[in-house]
Image (cartoon, rainbow over all chains, first blue to last red; front, side, top):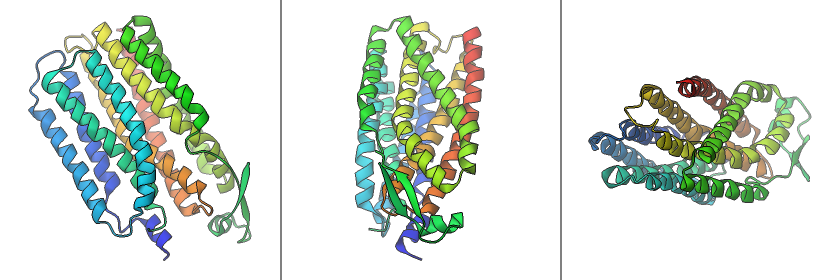
Length: 137
Length: 207
């Protein structure tokens, strides 16, 4: 089996997509939890727990990728940096809406950090999907 | 401009001689000509949110939401099955023409719909927990959340990966096949979610 076919098979690589989707689902759940309780004062603990779990999965994903052998980092970075720019703009638009509506304090911190996880994890998933099917570097 | 690509894998799958050349149109993964248009739409979105007036917000949310729903339904239930039955050369040609446009179109449409929608609901008070149809609003958050996870985690990466693969001097047909299957299935899932969106939004609009 050629390096390319092995890369296409993806058997050697960690389950970055699955973990990434779980991480995204957790921050989406945190966002829904906070927005579903407006304008009431809402306990932040569940949202913080969801955010922390999501951030841990992001860190785990990056760590697992860093330890993967034969991963095509050049291609990953080539794609992920542009995706990061695009998703930073999207996250910035959403943050702007929060600020425009005077969201402040704890909820703003949680939502901002959730947007950071979102804006980093989506480019990681895009870069990973592209690089996994590339020739092993 | 078209490029001729020799791809033994494709030739074997299509039952053609091994050295058959594939015509592959030249394309940009991100069509740069569309970027000013995206910037213009984003500027309109910022202006609409800053103004916080009902009509611009309603316009942006309805136009963006309608485009998002129609594209997802059309792609998931009409184009998806058609693409699935196309020959590989036809699928490649179609993909190189459609998918670069989707790379710019979908994130723009989704961002406009969600950002304008949230500002609109703040303006109308429909995102408050004392709103009489609050359960339906939360249901819409959940549907959008599911669509976001599927689209961002599977659909968008598959879209980009197919285009990058097709840009290579010798694209791997097995990779394209696998990623296109992922794209078509996830487009079907988001299409189903859009049916739920239509049910929820018509209920919210009619009170």
